[in-house]
Length: 431
Image (cartoon, rainbow, N blue to C red):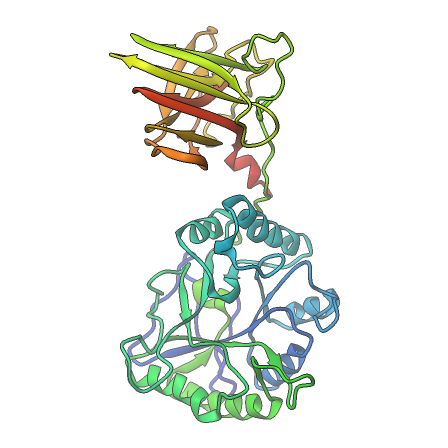
């Protein structure tokens, strides 16, 4: 990474050391100039920054480049070639927490894959609308981003309990706080105070978020700043390098290696994962087996109460003193069982509902042809309607030659399950 310090331009003296962020000296401030939503007017902002030796982070949507009012691919490439950072901002700018986990993965992961395939170094993510929860945060991590930025969280006035700046390193690199996005009503004094409060509070990191760069905007835009005001702010900001206030991109601050792309959905390793096919009509879906052990009383049903398609599997235990009952992939000679890669993790998921707690289980076949118990997931809670659940296995042992996975129940109650999936985590993340 080459972020060159300059007392004249205000470029940041932040250096990546062993893939980690270097802490600032007391009173030092780093300002990161962020531009969201792939808006065509942002080329004006880029030119203003470049004239002052500064570079920004542009959070773009891979599907929106070239649309009316948006940056073209050539313009985004030009931003990159001039030294600006290109970050990810989802495919379509949705409220992520209103989507299922799989839909969030598609929005976040596949946007990054598309940008990487277009030749951009993509390590930084911005939550659309600042909308996230614990699931969203984990998915951003799973999609191999190094950081994620919120919208808000820093103090925007002289009073209040919120911090004036992010500490360095940030408290949570996947929940980086900012001031609220700059609006048409934001003044030069407001912008200066974002920086001054950070300087007076001991220093830290101040990401500032811009959208439209126009004035007057036609049509009017709530989230906008005029080129004149942006110029005045950056002219004021640049000389502050002499007291330790500098400008750097998000990637330059966070540091870290460029991680490989992760596509969604990953390659499906199971056969008949939706449990629809039953060619011999015995009630058990092809490439699956109804298993279990111990002392218990149970019944199996091929039920039309399905999550997807026409059929699901249901097991009911009416009495139990030991053991369990489970639906697992057929433990055969590899016609139905996937072959694992030593050291790889496997993610199994399913939709289920149950009157009691249940859990995933995994088995492997040895070189000698024997099936061995491998591992099990945590208990999943009872659910009255279909609920998505997933679990990642430990690394596959070197002696494993085939895998068998499924859902189990080990207490009195009913488990209904459908729409399984199994993927190789490391293979999904291959370059």
